[in-house]
Amino acid sequence: MDCDGAKGYVLEVDLEYPDHLHDRHNDYVSVVTRDMLSEYNAKSLFGKQSCLVSNLYNKVKYVTHIKNLTKTV
Image 1 (tube, helix red, strand yellow):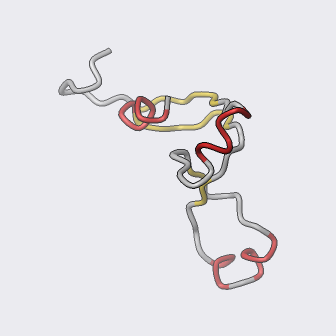
Image 2 (cartoon, rainbow, N blue to C red; image 1 turned 135 degrees about the vertical axis):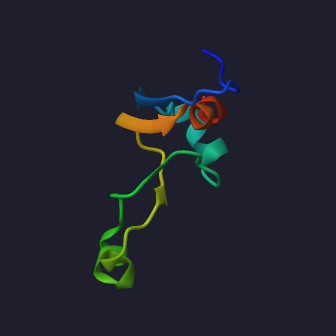
């Protein structure tokens, strides 16, 4: 698959974030989701909006463009 070719690819993947990388990547997590708000934020103004949230959880059926995936892996 040519990541820089004329065609783009959107993939559905399962991602596992190894525990040994959590401390190193805690400040910058490259995988985001929309549905992981804390209880505090869900009750605030953020709960009424769609927010992107970074976290270190494993992802199941995560949909992303292949260029984003190559930067994550």
